[in-house]
Image 1: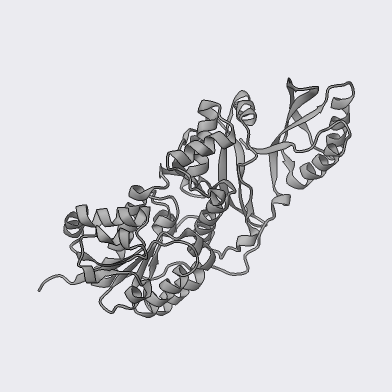
Image 2: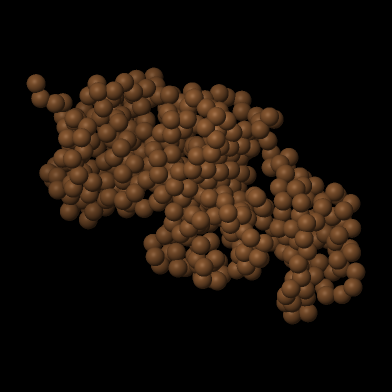
Length: 429
C-alpha cells in the first residue's frame, strides 16, 4: 500500500514564501525520504500574477484568491505567509473550519489572536504550528512547548529583532549615528522601508508575548507589555557604554516574580562578558533561566527567507506526520487567564543618565540633592565633554525602583540649569 499523499497549499510569495517554494523544489525528495512522507506543494495563492509565473506547478494550481485555496477539499496543510491580522486571521479560521492543519510565521496574529485560533484548532482536533513566528530559523517554540515543559521557567531574556540588533552593532563598530545606521540596514536588506515596528520595539514585544505565554503558561494582554524602542540611542551613548564595560542591546524580558509576570522591551546596557553581548548584526538569541535546568541560550539567524523557511518546513513535516497518522498532534497550549502583571514602575534597575547642564558651580550639588531626597544613590558621575557652553554629564545609579528614579528625574529636569531631553538607559548587569 502506497504512502498517503499530503497536499500543501501556500499563501503568500514574499521573501519567506519564495524561500519555502525553493525548499520544496530543491529538498522535497530528501524531506520525504527522511520522514517517510509523500508531501507535495499542490497550490499557491498570491495576488501578484508576476510572482506566480515562475512557479513550477500547473497553471490551474496558481491562484489569486486565497480563500479558494483554504476551502479546497484537496489541500491538507495550509501555510499562511501574508502577515498582519486581516485577512490572515479569517483565512486561518476558514482553513481550520475546513479541516486543515495550519503553519504560519505570523507573529502579530499569534501574539494577539493566538489563543482564539488555537482554541478553534483544538475544537476541530487540528493544530496550528508557528515555530517561525519567533526567531526565524532558531528553534524557540518547540523547546518551550516540549523540551523545557517539565521545568519552571523563571526568566526569558532575548535579542529578538534582527533590524535593531544590526543597527546597534553598526553604531558600535563604525561609530554611526542612528539615522546613518538605519539607512545602512535598509540598503543591505535588514530593515524595511517602514521600519517603525522594529525600531519602536513592537516586533520584539509580539515575539516576547508568544514566548512568555508558553514559558509562564498564561494568556498575555498586549497592553501590559512595556515597550520602548531604540530611536533615542546615540553614538555618544554607545561610547559611554563601552567606557563602563557594556554594550547596548534591545532586550525583550519576561520574568515570573512572586507578585506576578513582568514583561518589557527596551534598550539596555549589558556587561561585555554576558553571552548576549556578543550577539551581533542580524543574529538573534534567547537566554532562558529555568529552576532546574539553569541557563540555556539559543542562538542563530533570527530573520530572512532561508532561515525562516527551514522552521516553516519543520512545521509542515510535523503537520504531515499528524495527518498521516505517524504522530498524534494536539494543541498543548493550556494557558491560564486572569494573569497578574507587575508594572514596570514596581521593578528595579540601575540607570544610565546623560544630560546637558550649565557649566557653573552648584550644578552637581543641586541634582545630587534631588536624587538623594528620593533615595537614588549614584554609583558614578562622568563629566568629559562640552556642547557649546554646556557640560555633558553622565550618571550611573545603584539599584533603584523605576518609580523612584522617574520621580527624581522629573524634578531634576525642572532645575533651571538642566536642559531637557535626557538620555536614560537601564543597566542589566
